[in-house]
Structures are given as structure tokens and as C-alpha cells.
Length: 547
Image (tube, rainbow, N blue to C red):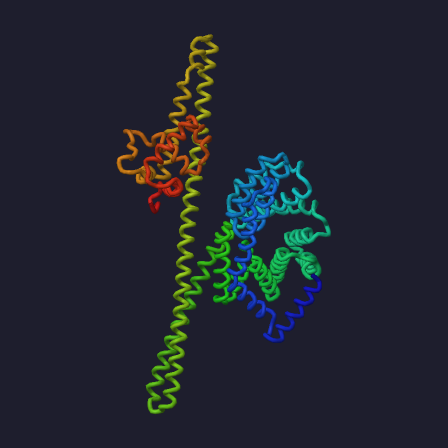
């Protein structure tokens, strides 16, 4: 790595002599990387395709587990949804093993994926479920590392001194289990120094690591990114931009979509009036964040991208007006110089070239505008889904507390009633009350009525949309005062994401065979395939479902 560093420095010095300064040469290299971003992604897809192909071959359960783990590692910073898919496959496989390490590793990975995809409650629950005293040294390293990432990602959009303190606590724990000679230890030691605002010590440690250790590309990008942060805080902006650029180039070349360097470059260039560069970097960063589905980066960049885009459009409009003024000036000048035929001829040719350039520029602007509109539409859909998800969570949490409170009050009344019977020695009445199912039946009836009313409030068009999936003459007709039938209630639970027949049967107090019969009966009434029916069911209920 030391030889590579020497060669890199010599190359930079050579390019400096040719192009004027290091910053410009790195920027050109970053522009090249952005232009060929699809090629680097194709290489990543080629690697994952080989692993997927190997997974389809006849393998032992342990080999399947290891291949899924490799695919999780490949997708973790590339495509979160795919990483989650393979972790979930290992969740099922780990139940077949007697090895506790398999299960623990899978839970840790699942918690990390949940955190990156914005499912913080599920992630925190999984992390809290792990008993640290049972972890191996390597598992403790992963545990502390993922807890740090959890608080960093959550604090991005929810800043708090508490989360910063928790990051410090878990980083200290991570340092205690890392080898003091390892690159991971030195990086985390530098990050701790940064949090303590000891930038000099952090920079010294990282620069020694950056130029002397045999780092892999991911570690190299991380060191460059952190050094960029330190330089910016020390107001050494040119140096910080160089480090950010090196990190961004490496991230693109390794097809790392969850990255922060190019975002910081976009922000810096925007505040320094370099709108074109800011737009290019922000667009690339937003595309990567959306592709990877890293929620905290997507939310952060979507807000800032709209600001940069507005400035970019304003500048483009200004340039367009300047071009129009220029064309008008050339036209006026050509009228006054009508007598000079040769000069007019040259001016006409020049004007022709300008018009062609203007046409090309207008076409490029139109294409960029189309891409922006498509990105806006995608963001709009994402925001609508996010708002719907938040509304559902808020509504069900409120109803959950209401039901729990009501149930506690009813239990208290029931207890007092039984207590009075016992004190009065009315044992016959007491026995009759305990034998009767009336209370349970009444509670179930109220529970289902509550569920029906809340569900219809969230998905007011559900019954109409569901009937639209059924053939003519097979529509479900509700009785007076009835909100949902048992059949509708089964598919309402599926609409909420509860696919497990055991859970549905338990909730509705029906047998598995009854649930199966209801599903079969409904699917026989529709002309759609099972997959298409399920897909359309997921869109039912809202006023703009697109059915």
C-alpha cells in the first residue's frame, strides 16, 4: 500500500503540472466516475449474479446460509431491499441450526438493515434483545458497530445530545474489543477524537493510516471522508474538497450507494455559488440514495436537491436570456454591416454555429428537466407512501392505547363483580359467571367492531375496491349496520400486511381450514391470478389506489 501511495502522489504531481492544480484533476476524475457509474454497478451486479447462481445449486443448509451472508454483505451498501431479502432467508435457515452464533449473527444483520431502511423501532428492538454477555469478541465488535450506526442514522433527522452521548458510549465499547493495531481501531479512535473536538490528534492518526496501511477500498473511502470532515472543520476547504472527492470516486468505483462524500461536495459547491457542480453531485447522490433505499439519506438529499435544482433552473434561465440578448445583438449588427459582404458572410456562419449550440443546449435542458420531473414524481409517490404509513402507525397506536385502557377498566369491573359475589358467598352465581362465555363473546364482538371501524377509517374505499376485484354477481353485500364481514376482515388483515394464516386464525378465532376455505372461496370469485389478486389487494382502500 505504501508503494501505491507513492505512485498516487507522483501521479497527482504529474497531473498538477499538466492541468494546473490537484483539485481540478480530481474533479475531472470524479466527473468520469459519475458518467460511468452504471458500468461500476454492472460489475457489482455481475458479482452478485454469480453468488445467486451458486445459491440455486444443490447446497447444504450451512452453505446456503454462508452464500446468503455473502449476498447480504454485497448488497448492504448497494441495495438495502436485497440485503433484507437475504437476511430474512437466513432468519429462516438459522432456526434449523443448533448453533446460537448463526442466529445471533442473523439478528445483528437484520437490525442493521432495518436501521438503514428507516425501521428504527424494529432495529432497536432486535438490538435490545441480544444478550451481550453471550457474544463472542467478533460478535461484540459487530454489535457495538451496528449500535453506533443505528444512533448516527437516527440522529441525522432527529438531532439530540442524548444520541451523541450514546454514540460515544458504544464507540468506547467498540474500542475496548478491537485490536489496537487494526485499521478499524485507528478509525474509531479518530472519530472519538473528533467528537471531543481534538481534530489535530484525529487528523494525525488518520493520515498515518491513510498513507501507510494496507487498506481496502471501503476503508480508504471512509478515511478520506473523515479527513475531509476534519479539514472542513479546520477551515482548510481546498484540502477538504480533495479528500471528499477521493472518497466519492472510490465509493462510485466500488458501487457504494450509501455514501456521504458526494452529498457534502454538493452542499459545499452550492454555498460557494458553483451551481452546476452542486446540481450534478446532488443529482448523483439522490439517485444513489433512492436506488439503495437508505431512508435517512433520501430524506436529507430530497430536501436539499429541490433547493439546488431551483438555483440551477434559475441560472439556466438567466443563461438563456443572455443568449437571446446575444443573438439579438448579432442580428442588429448584421443589419448595420450589410455593405461588408465578406464580413456579413463570416458573421452569418458564426450565427449559425451559435444557433446550433443553443439548440443543443435547449435539448439538453429539456432532457434534464424531464429527468427532474420523473425524479419528482418518484419522490411524490414515496412521500405519499411514507405519509400513509405514518398515519396508519399513529392511528393504530392511539387505538391500541384506547383498547388497553378500556380493557383494564373492564377487568377491574369484572374483578369487583366477582369479589362481591365471593364476599356475599353467592357461589352458585359465581360459578355460573365463570362458566359463561358471554363476557368473552361480547369483548370479541367489541374488538372486531373496533377493528372494523378503525380499518375503514384508514381505508375508506376498501369494500368498494375489494368488490371491484370480484366478478359480476359475486360482490359481497353488507347487512345494515355491518362494516366488514368475516371474509372482508380476513383480507383486511392481509391489506395491513398480516399474511400469516396462523395469526389471522388466532385473531378471528377461526380454524386454519376455515381461513383456507374463505380464501379459496373469494379467489374463485375473481378472474385474476393469485399473484395479481394479491398485488391489487395491496392497493385497495385509498381514494387514489390506481385500480
